Every structure is written in C-alpha cells, then in structure tokens.
Amino acid sequence: QVNVAGEEPKSGFAVEEIAAATNEIRKLLNLQVKGLMTIAPLVDNPEEVRPVFRKLCELRDSLGLEHLSMGMTDDFEVAIEEGATILRIGRAIFGQRRYS
Image (cartoon, rainbow, N blue to C red):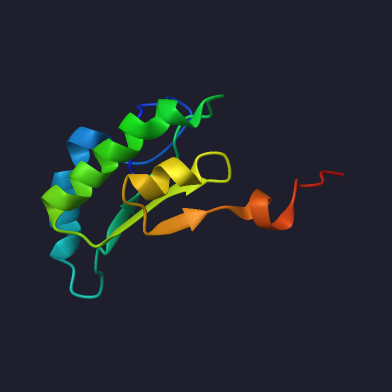
C-alpha cells in the first residue's frame, strides 16, 4: 500500500520509500510483489483523485509491476481510466454498511 496523498491517518509506504521497499521485498524468495495499491482521499468530486491514481500508475510502471489496486465505489471510473486492474467497490454491490 502506498500513501500517495500523504494523508496522516492512512498507513502505507510513502511515495519516496516504495522503490527501496520493493527492491528489498524482491530479495525474499517466498514473496513476489505483483502490484501496488492505494486508498485515495475521500472527496466530493472523483476528478480530484485523478492525480493520486496517475501517480500510483507511474510508480507501478517505474517498478515494472503488473497490478494497480485503486478505486472504490465513488471513484472507480476514474481509477479504471488511470489503469486500475483491481477495484474495491463493495458499497456499489452490497449497499451501505449497517452499523448496530
């Protein structure tokens, strides 16, 4: 997971850390890095997260990886346009969560 937007409450590697981390993980025989994922900031206009998705795509390409996991119910169209190969669209499929 890459914290592309640098949001404080979110975890993940910083953009400037991901290349070194990926290279270290590649040294481990039983692990394979297949792609990157990010969770974009929650915004009213999905177009506002396009730069986040575009940056993750650039990182993926620079590392020679295959997959991009990005995009949720409110922004998956933009994520697809920016190269997502894996989406997380639970609410669009299952509806709103019910908290009790």
